[in-house]
Image 1 (cartoon, rainbow, N blue to C red):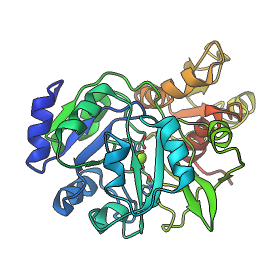
Image 2: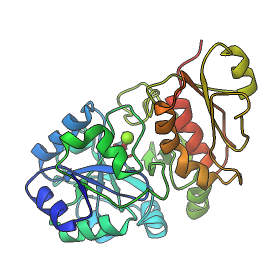
Image 3: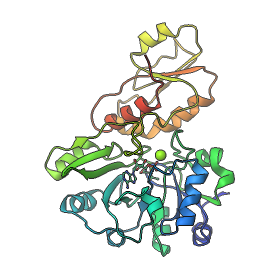
Image 4: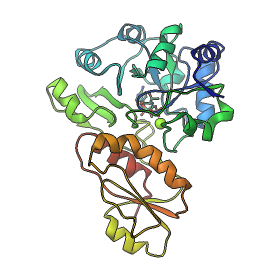
Length: 317
Ligand code: TXA
Ligand code: MG
């Protein structure tokens, strides 16, 4: 059921059931983060491997502190600047957070989402919410309540409708590795912003097939149709026998292909990021056989867009 009732959402969550929640990044599939049984339902509904840990959502830094042992100085600086917002911090957890949430890791990913409905809901609950993106594992993340309903409606008690997500890409994940501050996943806060807040360079960890670095899986965020990324004119030649859909940054290819979608006519990376997932879903429904896309400008949110596209893409020999 889709609706806007905080009372209903709260009722389901208090009963240990799952509710899809709007955030500024993507919709989350939420449940009581302190209840192992409820968290297990999240993995099951998403068909998600249990080695891939979940992010815990709180409504305040004060509440976040209840679940971590140390809140280091770098994390404080980032929390102060970007919370509520599209930033997840990996921090040493305490025993209130069950193993299943972190896939056994000593670190827990925590963030305060910036969406008024969800912040109100979190304020009303006696527990934080564990919530991965509300899509079947491996598929494109949902940026509207309808996206969630399209794939998971029968597995979720309630879908809280908070409109279209304003950022449209998942949170940036920042943590410490071997004493250095690292970006575990690029996202809604750009690397440039993080570096300017911390006044130092940070390392971006590469995506990998190594399950010890979950959520950084090489293949992820994929539409059902084959997607190829590269120089569009060249790809058009290579796939000239196919019905093609193109997702481009700012140039229109309507005269050459079955369907062409420009993400931002004004070359605005924020707008492109916001429309990316919705457009991938749309292309999956269009009468095309393959999806072609290009590398976006490699700065600001462009880095996160490129990360998602590369991982959505079919591997080439
Ligand atoms: O914007 C977002 O972050 C959204 C909204 C719903 O908050 N959530 C989201 O969750 O993108 P999900 O489950 O799709 O991605 C979570 C990723 C994991 O795959 C993993 O890479 C990382 O966060 N993560 C979470 N907890 C971690 C931990 N303890 N250690 C390492 N990585 C962790
Ligand atoms: Mg996800």
